[in-house]
Image (tube, rainbow, N blue to C red; front, side, top):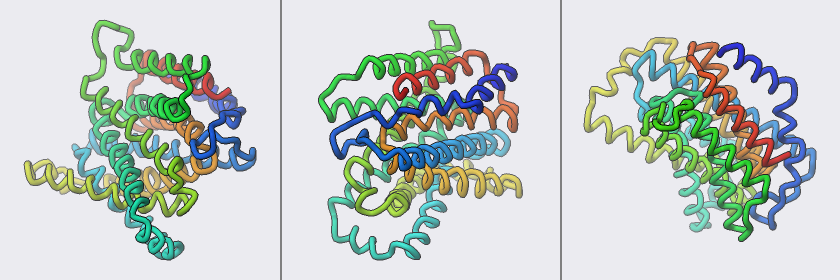
Length: 341
């Protein structure tokens, strides 16, 4: 299994992965819907930023898996901590660099509504992702999250009143086949992962699609800039995230007993791996990349996340991945190539 994973990763490093994005800029949509023709240099910079952010998300998933398995951390605590800490970091940046935009936002109540929806997507993506990792593992959760491309494509088709192209239809079939392969492990009469794990994964994919589509399509990035937009949305995401944590603590205070057992390694993983790199840097890079490369291309660039998460989980945590898991990942990458090359 490990040798197969190494060959897959070698294929990606040798340039096969980049082939999937070589001509993604040909995707076109009417102005304002995310597939517009983009100047090549800007597009490639956007691809690089989005790929970097997605890879850091993979690191975040592996770090969260370690906290869940080794320290008994609960998803609500990890999500609440990372959203609040990241939101405060973004707020500090905003106060230093973009304070004037706060007045602009306060004078635009409609934009506040769009930011609330953007923040809800960010909250859902992190909240559902944490539960998905806890119910499965980092690699599986990331592969299921890649189904966000299907939701993004559905939105684009509905917005333009156009049916998917042959390539897009084939990509959709590959994405669904990959999900079935991972969920059943080749035994199509039953699920190999828990229904809860599959449900959390699908909910996570939908939430990711929301935060990919909303800010670009309603013009938040254009009016406020990507970093300001992500920062405000992350602060708003911290409200329901910490609300959910407070509700769980009120219902059963003992669930947070694991925090008292955190040692220096656990706090380092939570602060540096999950929060600073896996959330703050990851979202800043990924959504800045989407602002440059477009929503559809950006959603597909998220394919770097399961590769990163699977590799880190296998090499660092010793997570075992079956041939069916790697096969599902390969189908997801084939979906990406089919929809963009």
